[in-house]
Image: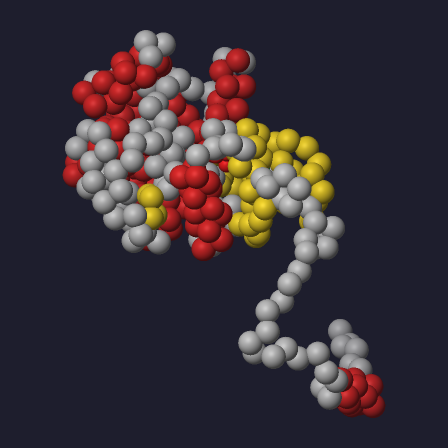
Length: 321
Ligand SMILES: Nc1ncnc2c1ncn2[C@@H]1O[C@H](COP(=O)(O)OP(=O)(O)O)[C@@H](O)[C@H]1O
Ligand SMILES: [Mg+2]
């Protein structure tokens, strides 16, 4: 096939015009600061959590949608510091299964703190589970495998950066779908209560969601580490596989009952809760996996999120279920 080449004269001319512009001004003094004003147009509310409200917005300069998280007003200063830390963690971490943070600011007329991040299309896992339950359906096992493989990859990345998320749960897992394509990418959201082990050494504040929180996190142990996230990922995985929270029967008895169950109660057998037509081997493997992830003693859990991800991949091998 003939290949079209530019004529030698055109190439010489193009290089010459590039060389011409080299002499123009516009360079910056190395000590200069750049000031810039930025506008985001709010389009709609996307979600609301404990600390903030998340909106879809449009950035007319870069011509793209973003998600803007706004801190609720009137919260104590310590929570504002957490919010700022959340934005900074998001800006520092770069991983395909974490939402990138682009910008952080204060709205001039209201004084509200906000940050802008990658806009995701899809639904959080809590919403997907609620909808599936209402239709008496379960999420397809292959999808569950993909979601948790992504989330555990993101967790490993955060842990390697010295962060413990401390709030892993379906509401903070986003199942993003690319427009017009059937490609699913799960993203771990909400580093709002994350612990930076390099800065917050010894901090023992109690936080998280009692439905997913590890015993050492509830008890405020100073030794709490990334394995608390593995526990919460195990609880979330159980719920995602079966459609029901493993401590569903305890939740209605209130927070203290839930906390007692996290610290001392036994998880109901996952193998029994999975469909009978699944192979007994897969059910037993998944049951063992969740028991290791949710062991009361962190030393008995998977040592890393990566280890748990590999165990899940093995347990869900396509030929076995
Ligand atoms: N980047 C995003 N793109 C689209 N929706 C998002 C995004 N971030 C959050 N959301 C939605 O907003 C909800 C609350 O966000 P989250 O960060 O968990 O806030 P909170 O700290 O208040 O819990 C999420 O469950 C999700 O539905
Ligand atoms: Mg949240």
